Image 1 (cartoon, rainbow, N blue to C red):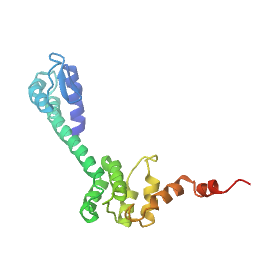
Image 2 (image 1 turned 180 degrees about the horizontal axis):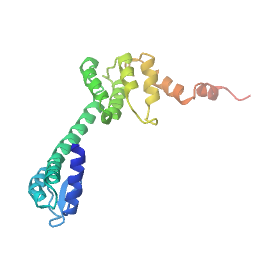
Image 3 (image 1 turned 60 degrees about the horizontal axis):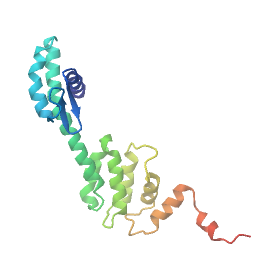
Image 4 (image 1 turned 180 degrees about the vertical axis):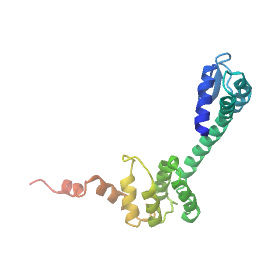
Length: 192
């Protein structure tokens, strides 16, 4: 409901000559002045009540303007959470696992969690518990073409905790997942 109200407020603002820009909002009257979401929500909320709408629709629209602030904060939190997950590789497994379990419940964080798991394998100080990491990875809703997903599954299924503790594991996974097993051996054999 909040997102619908916020979207209705965005459409209403466009009708009023106010549109969202990359780093804020701009009005047709003063396109050189960048406004914050908070400024837009507060300054335009009163104008909603001058609209030819019934009281319930006026109220919904006013709340939609306020919901724009919530949506902006939510997106900022998601960006921050994605960044934290992507950089979590060197964090001890016992510290990051509860956060990972929470992230599994939020589809918007699945790709970032996958990158965090991969970083945990590749980072010099990376720390993973392969079984638990694989169980988390299996719960993620990821695009089928997610880069290195098959290789990550392969190394975790084989019980590898870290690239540096099993230096050939990733290369083996790449060969195995690409179907190129034995390609190296064929190139080494002399032609007959």
